Image 1 (cartoon, rainbow, N blue to C red):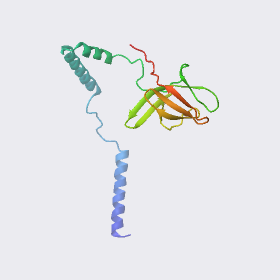
Image 2: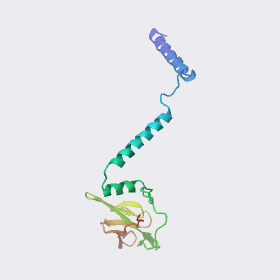
Image 3: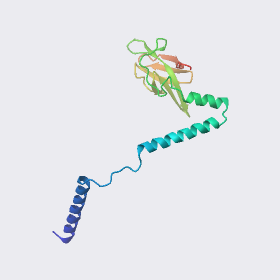
Image 4: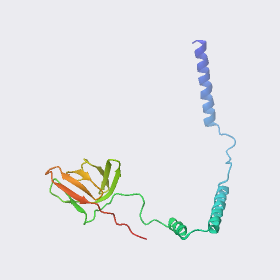
Length: 168
């Protein structure tokens, strides 16, 4: 073994010994610089200060209403979830096997030349095949979606329907 290889092996052994020492021997000082109770008290003082400033500020009735509404619980989850059961009054969808399935066109998005429709909670572009049944999205407008049956070539319109939401 040459001098160069001996030096490299020696450095490797020193590095392994240092790593083992750091891993196995506990360090002496493990105290936390801040006590969590002090952080909590500082946050409480900041909250009191902001609350006091808000009480002293002159707010318009609109601003007061917004602040009251911001603090209440939400009745509806702001993150959309797929509907588990479709409503009976939804539009019927063409199907290759003759079974009528329900469709609900509830969302429309247009960016430049691109148009997207939300049907039964899924996103579709023109030319996309529906997840359920044998139909293609033929045309999308803000008022309706035109579907084309893959089996018969028949076209059918599904009108846009706003989802009903509870009012407070």
